[in-house]
Amino acid sequence: MPREKKADKIERARLVEERMVAQYGEGESSLDYEGDPFRLVCAVVLSAQCTDAAVNKVTPALFERYPTCYDLAGACIADVEDIIHSLGFFRAKAANLVKLSRMLVEEFAGVVPNDLDQLQKLPGVGRKTANVVMCEAFRNAQGIAVDTHVFRIAHRLKFAGPSADTPDKTEKALLSIYPKEDWLYINHQWVHFGREFCRAQRPLCGTCIIEDLCPSSMARESAS
Image: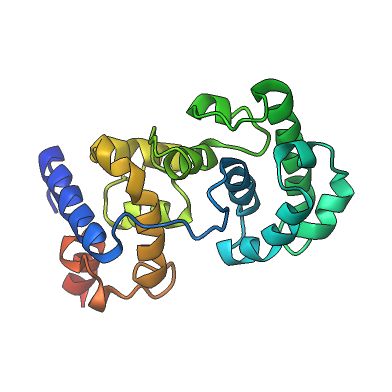
């Protein structure tokens, strides 16, 4: 199979985004955070290695007890652990929540920074989390958050090659073919798409909204 030209890949990415907009609009976060950037940061940190639904079960109690970063900065880590103990890696997450709250208070005057690099200074906040916060809380996309759904879909669509074997490399590949105005929406759209159609196990290619644009699907058809 000949290698796809960059211009053709960009055009295919444009068509994929048109379908995503038609199906999901701008997409929306599955995390409940009441429009508060601080609560969003906490929720995304908690969502690592577990579902958004599981996070949404513990955050009401967490934010009832610690509604602001000032409250959480003074929390006992063991008390936070008790609230979020149903989540995976709850001890590390509890420690990170308290530490990032203290950093927000001490270094950022209690305000979540609208800056990708500054966000990544917060304990427990990597590039993916920072990208989510920039897009969702500030609508100031500086990249594309690559979670397991986005990583999987990017590779199935052949928008990222075999050498893009990390989230950062996959993000770089996506940024090279999608215009900046699309960066704001891709993560949410692809998360919904990954849950509905492009599942990790038994993807629903037969009814997929972008089956004709997916090289992986066409390859399976050719092999059948």
